[in-house]
Image (tube, rainbow over all chains, first blue to last red):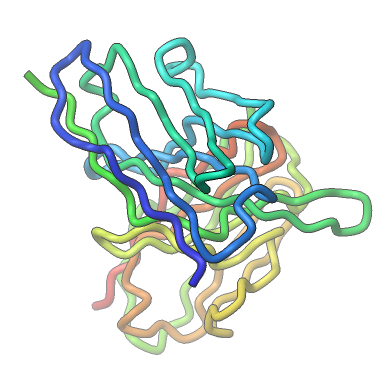
Length: 125
Length: 108
């Protein structure tokens, strides 16, 4: 079964740190880019970071750049999200997502086809 | 950056109704548009990719149309299990694959 399983969420004080993990199974992990998407309570979906298949390229949402670091260990089929200097507005469910793509005519199209169940991060004193 | 705006923010319809959700992009994005369904307390699921392509396992009552700046998701005959929030996502402007604010669909 193709799946992603997140872990590492919890309650942390403002200014604290957490390390989220996302373990993949059922597919060739090293062949896919992985993204993190979060959802604040009662709100919509917010893309926050991505890493390419071999871990050499990363990108971040402006509001987390410099505080969050995404990395991966393809030998362990795992992606990590190191979060520091956490703030109240970082509270939410964090989803690990596999991105697949299709070449159609001259364009390459991306879509998020496998989602983990999410891990909850609560930043509060 | 490309912004995507969904309308309405919520709707209520009866079982069997035809329902249409709209997503507008702030600039032309071709067919770089996906749709996701999210039930309460669950992770989102991919419904439609590249504007019109039905993801594997998704019921055929779901369909997507549009290109450029205007896109629609249609449920041809609403079923009780379709009560959920639906999000569109643009993938034209990377790396941030931004989402619309969502449309909540309720069953009357």
